[in-house]
Length: 105
Image 1: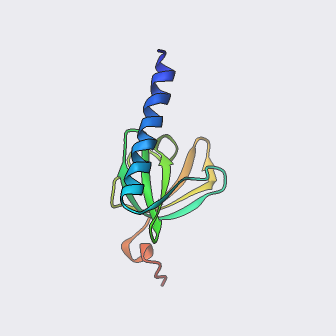
Image 2: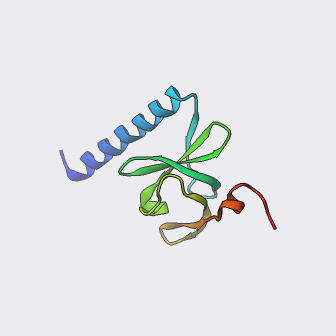
Image 3: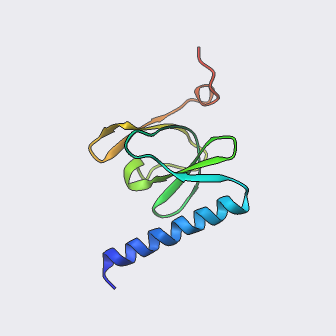
């Protein structure tokens, strides 16, 4: 099996684990829209290749760490904007706690 095939299989297995986690916790889960998606919320469960983001209610969005960056940590409140991509990277803004709660001043 080639390295590319092995990586693809590992990524597939990671996604399956995230789907199982969501199902077991009564959460909706979807892949991020990497063309025009704009998401805000707290980062959550992660694997080697992916990280989830709680975007409201019981909904998780799955982001590819290769696109949003590998320094994302669970618990971080961030805004991820794929429409403002710079090359291969989505624009990621770390939010202050007051911004994360939707309060503006």
